[in-house]
Image 1 (cartoon, rainbow, N blue to C red):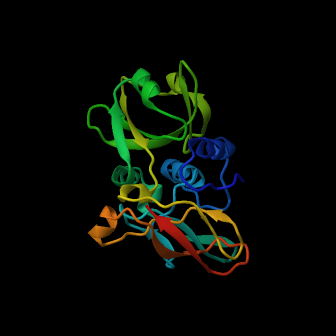
Image 2 (tube, rainbow, N blue to C red; image 1 turned 120 degrees about the vertical axis):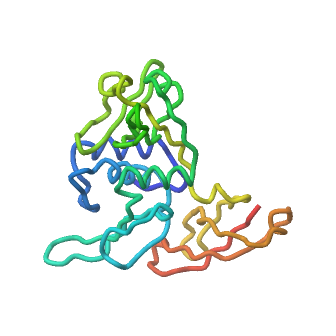
Length: 239
């Protein structure tokens, strides 16, 4: 599998999409209607962090959390906790609208002009505006763009060959990691135990004075990816 990155990389998401467009990654569940599940995997492997967690097996209704977590295996069946925002078109739309920005295009040429590699796109009925399918932009050149998708498998196919602007309009999402919605950002630092470079996750600071203060402030965050398999304290600077 490709290596998951920190921060969002559209090219990394596209690499994953091309690898699994014609198959399934056995590390994740798959469904008869698999389009949103597939694109969620792509953007996760592109570096977007999961949001929330659960230890309870099953599908959890949520448009504010976004995760797919392996829980256990019983009788050779892998079981997961997964949110509807990960696997359902409408809830995917609601979640990604809340963490980033989106725009609607009514022609394929307008979509091509605005999209970038790694952008999720939803197809919506041109009359009702209801989104019904999710794909991801996997490649782009000077004249067109290409996409990958599941349910009906599509692997890096030309948007002009497969999309229908007479029937659909196109909802284009611009991905941001959840931490970018806060008024500060974190610098890179190193795990003090394993020296692995990391980018800490978002921590919400309630004090409004923090946002006004330009001096260095130090807080603690636990680095759970340390190769020593233990949770080490990591310090980072908020700016």
